[in-house]
Image 1 (spheres, rainbow, N blue to C red):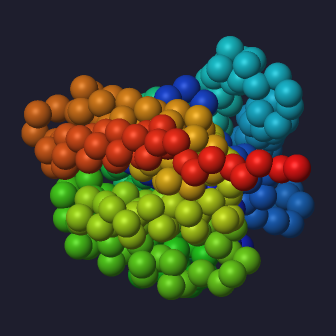
Image 2: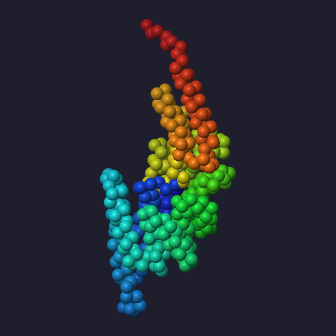
Length: 352
């Protein structure tokens, strides 16, 4: 999982390849976007409104303090000091959570406040708490845009907890409310990941293709790359290695250095699934490499990635048997390629 925006409302998590990506707290760009943009405009409080709700100003001040911390975190993430994010970021997030709780966020009448609070909980690792907050918000039946965001957030939380059947249903609920093509593509791609986690490869391939069919050419740069990668893995697991390699090549026309599947908003469920993506990526690079040394190195990296998947996957994994077959196939291809490269070619003609 999982790779972060939705339109025109601030996005949820970006894609997910499938499992909580550890410490960099994926999806926080969406959290910050919500924190800075989602609060509704309202008229200045009157004497009568203050009388009806004397604590409103205090709650607003607490939320503003928390959002300032989130903005500082966002600036830190965008700075060259990324190594300090894991050290300082959680401190600011925990303080923001405390401020939100003092402001009554868990029971707030403002859906945007509950959504932001759930995001903070999720990124601090309290996924169960985030689920409880989001389910409570949905029981309150907020307006449709907030319900769409809540179902999307809930689906991501279910993914992190391995509750894939509930995740798929949550995406269905979000899709029923989401009108924007790019956001629908993200929902469909994430849902396809959940189908793949359950071993339903046919539904996964169909979901990825449906996601890509909603995107225009410009959207491909932002949303299509991770979907192409997901489709590549699904095709490989359906038995179509050549189709998988071709889709990785296509993804790299938009993102040459694979930055999107290695970025902060992309996570893997299960965590060891990153090795499958890496294996296919190195295999595709080996076939495309022009220099023999680069090709040899890429094949070795691909074989090592297959071995990593096999070593880390549990015995009941849906795809471990195929991974073993792919490792053997990749190693044979490597040996055959190296033999051809070692054969002396025809002597170059002498020049006079």
